[in-house]
Image (cartoon, rainbow, N blue to C red; front, top):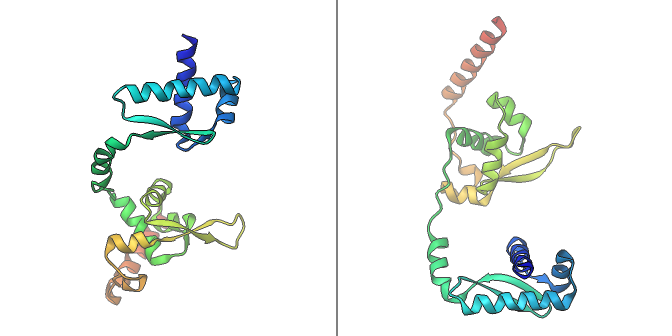
Length: 189
């Protein structure tokens, strides 16, 4: 039973690492000697090869890595090649448009414009590679400055930020007037 538990630990370690792990590191994590550890890993390697498993352990000199078996690559390629649909919510679109037109811009400036917190929206936009950190503001606390990425341009089919649509002057004046009216309403309460 102890052997199976140790093999499970090796498997969990290699899976979590996502890269080759040296025999020394595995032995240290298991709190066992190198030869016992080598035997455990090699037993796991053999069992993966005997069974119709989708994974295998590869050895690279004195390191080991958990990998997919080559015969399953076609299935993996089909899965990974399918288009990913990143959904942009209205909040994310609003946040993205503020960043696109006002960049470089800090989170605090975005929140001031939107009037609400936007941590989640910014984090999702970063995850989708539409927004990235472009520097730090030279001010107290050195807040992060955000800007759009090349992926943003690609997704929205524009060559450069200068290709972003501009609002007609009368619309800008309408928005300014609406904003001033909202400010007056909030001051009256």
